[in-house]
Every structure is written in structure tokens, then in C-alpha cells.
Figure 1 (spheres, helix red, strand yellow):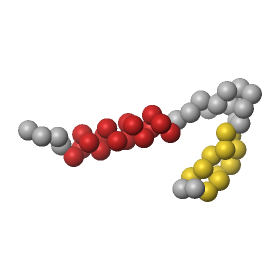
Figure 2: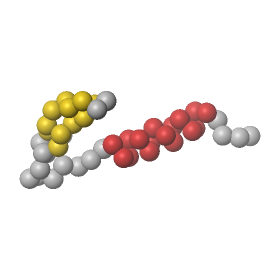
Figure 3: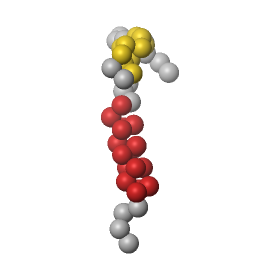
Length: 46
């Protein structure tokens, strides 16, 4: 009963989300890139 393709896809999605979410410290700003293009700068908070 090998690995289902859905399980493999779910694992990749979890890994992708884990490496793409970052906390921004209160005194820093983050530049957001989407597909290699600058989307904008974000400050701390949600």
C-alpha cells in the first residue's frame, strides 16, 4: 500500500508553508516578493 499522491502533495504544501512564513521583528520591515517581483514592504503585525 504505497504512498498516495495526495499525501506527498500535502507534505510538500506543509514544507512550503513552513519555510515561507516569517515573523518580522518590531523594529524591522519586510519586502514581499511574489514570483520574483516586488509587491511591497510590510511592517510588523498581521
